[in-house]
Length: 433
Length: 71
Image (cartoon, rainbow over all chains, first blue to last red):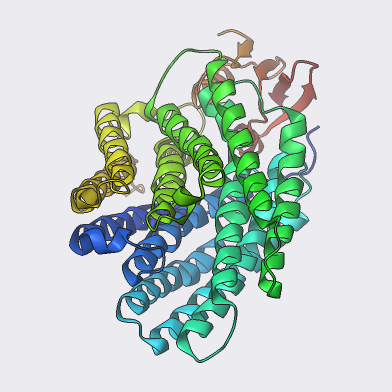
């Protein structure tokens, strides 16, 4: 018989959905903020507008969606029993919303008290989430590359949060910490340690399953997490106060690992067993191309120092990694996960002998394709903003429209679930008179 | 209904749909075999809740062969 994995701890559907439905709202706010700030937001990595936009996407969009995915994925696919998921979601979800909001406002108005407040709320919520999910991942009897990758990703999230709280305290007070180096290390752990490793861990599982590709090569899946962890450790040495000559090569090595994962994913997509292209596959393809674009950009920066020193180069990299890689991949993933969760939960309610409606009815394909086109138009406009900053306002409006369409499509799926459930209840025979 | 479901070329939840239909008509002393490229955790959950037992073997090409019968 099958090992004693317990998969009956799947959380109520409201647990992932509250995170999934909130994420696009932060994307809309990010787009509108860019449209409002215009060229000033793209002028420098350290402008208050750029930092607010970065955290609207990283904490508002990414962290919300990824927390929802973790809360669902760990019990169902990794066999980890998450302690009281409903209660955890009730605590973590509002804390992330309030913390992200406070952090963004703190950047915009440069208010020390708000930095401190945001740092405390976010660090507390994330450490709590890490303890709950980390315990489940450590206790699960399941093994394999997905579990390893997710364990390191959760560790990466904890490091990111603690560094973020330290930075918030540094911005709030008079501390003479090396803020520039701390910010570099914080970004490395957030995007590489947490973001990329969670994306990879989930991809090992869902890309072959939903995109009908061959499995990821075992060697890549086994070694990606430890190698990236070692690179992040080396990258963290810069906080020590010295800036070694090989720092640039550590950065390039990290991006090479990311591009390697992206290249293998594209290669697997080319070898998929059924030549069907759907929005999820295309979103993933776009995300992986942006990840390779990051490495190519870094190579150009290394060869031509004038490019590396250009004030809008960090903006270019930021667009590639946030809207390009992570928003695209999450967007594509949501279009599979949400209808699939609808289907599974309805099946559970209906019992054996009856089939839930087809997944294609949950979100109209036409609506997903339309949103995908707007999203990639936004990414192209955002990238073009690095060369023609006057495009920033238009890019912001298009990005806000894309996120609004994503939110609307997800709401349609949630409404489909609720309406179908209500109809089932109404059709069920009542108690005998 | 077929007693072997090859879900390796199908997108979720199609293999699950076929399995549910097949289980609906599966005689108590008969067996349903599923071929998949992944562990179907949601199916295991359904089987557990509805009184089925199963064995799972992994073939050299990565195929998970799951044999299901009434407990």
